[in-house]
Amino acid sequence: MLYLRLSCFLLHVLVVFGTELTFELPDNEKQCFYEDLEKDVKFDIDFQVIAGGNYDVDSFVTDPLNNVLYNEKKKQYDSFSHTTAMKGVYKVCFSNEFSTFTDKTVYLDFRHGDEEPIIQTMTAPVALTQLESSCVSLHEILKVVADSQTWYRLREAHDRTKAEHLLERVTYWSIGETVLLFVIGIGQVMMLRSFFSEKKGSVAAPT
Image 1 (tube, rainbow, N blue to C red):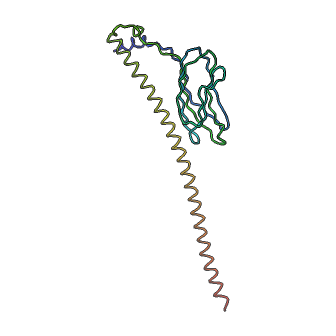
Image 2: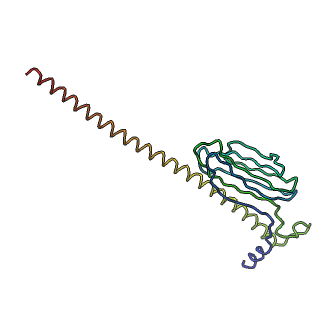
Image 3: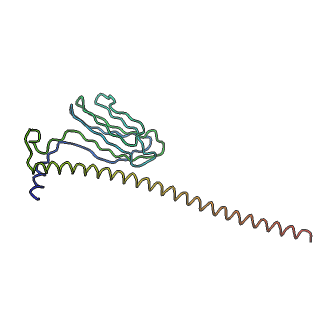
């Protein structure tokens, strides 16, 4: 088993480059990310708003000549894939300029490049050995596990933010109800006292 793991590790060669980050996007602001890419390179973008307001942002992608490749308004999450037609700096921007008082928290996953076969003989019409087949299977399973973990982390962060927001609203509502009950109680006491005062005054007048 140790030999199998070591062999798979040595055969696992990747040329996929990526950036995975979570950042704060203040209200009335725009934030951009830049990547210098070669020609005929495929890149993939996944993003999701995990906190703030209605969980939406504006997003657009431009090429080195500022041609718009992708432009969407008020998206909660989305994916975009593109193969570069020229070498240069590509720009990915997120805008919260339509929001006047709510900050957003955005998750971004930017990947570019192709993944080489973990075993070079996979490109040739040659049958794989049992060890090579096991390595390929493990590699595919690990990719699925990594994607699943990312998805669960996003869901957990999104749900936690919603729960905290709901807790805050319930707390404010409870405080408001408590204050209202005190005001109503004091008002009823004052009203009852005024009834007895008027009664006592009306009795004392004829004497």
